[in-house]
Length: 216
Image (cartoon, rainbow, N blue to C red; front, side, top):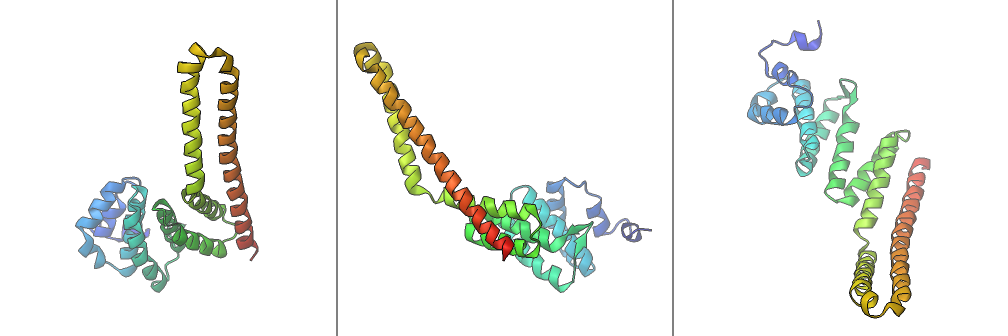
């Protein structure tokens, strides 16, 4: 008889475990309706339900809520010496999703610290490495205000040259058509060159930082 069968069918734990795996909203509603009863369960059972409730909140995009739940869950997991629920590494899963939540909230400094710690725990885990790279890359793209301003100016110029070509040059000054077209195409090349160069530069920089973590 497995552990689930040992628990009476009308118990809070059994009722929660019977909810379909991806029925995230149902899990959240069940937890919030029965929170007091869940807290009165055996510590490990209570923590397991908290864990899946938190995961459900993450899955529906409630990232701010998840960061708060993770702050409560992590000490419980450590204090109760809980390692796995259904072969899922509980501590690392909560920590990873906490980092992913901060990343989605654009709190890059916090998520960077979390992903760095996860890499220290498991340097072979490619998911942690990819998350670290994504975080570094997203942070640089988000903070690239001068590049964005310059890009917007180039786009405006490209639009102006296109309008000038259609409305003025083509019908009235066809002799200037080649010059205007060439200038417009040159601006497009410059725009994409800047975007690609900026992205490549920061991707390489992030890879170097990742290598340092992996080799430390």
